[in-house]
Image 1: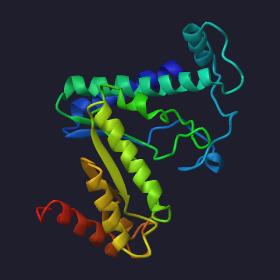
Image 2 (image 1 turned 45 degrees about the vertical axis):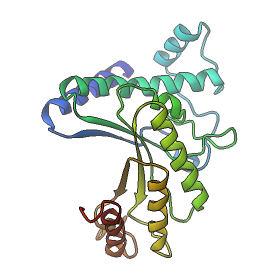
Image 3 (image 1 turned 90 degrees about the horizontal axis):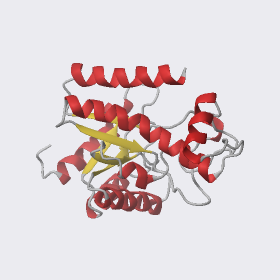
Length: 239
């Protein structure tokens, strides 16, 4: 099943490369499947959540020289990170072989990744993601406006640092759906932070603030206009 799944995934990526005349390909928050109740953009996950299928156990033993532990040891975490990246690396290289000018963006969860707070979802080691040659843009996910500005600053600084370290473009995202700031001037401040820190690309999701959808912000169109005004401001009115 494992081999069939990965082969199908790689073939689908290759098909997209041939059939989709896109400027870029976006890996949107790739991660291992986890129970929703223990997965959080700022929190951790249970130590006992890991795959021990026969294929993973065999591959682990080949790499480390001993049977895969039943606990989530540092070696198991390393194995999971390597295997997760390998999946996207192969797919990205197939796409780049067909469309060498297309930008491949890998957008990872904006989590602290410290000893106390890490998600262990496969892409928590930003250095490993940044060092992957098949990726052109290092991107980090949306942060809720309710979180402290210091958290936004921390994520933004680290995003730019990783991108520069590995010769990538940096990308940060603005929340354009579901939640909105109490004061829309907060968007201005967060955009200013991104610009000041040297972010190459500022993105937003979703279209029109999710107007008319279940993920729409309370004032979806006002939120959309506020984000658009910041694009025009940063780009000098060319947007």
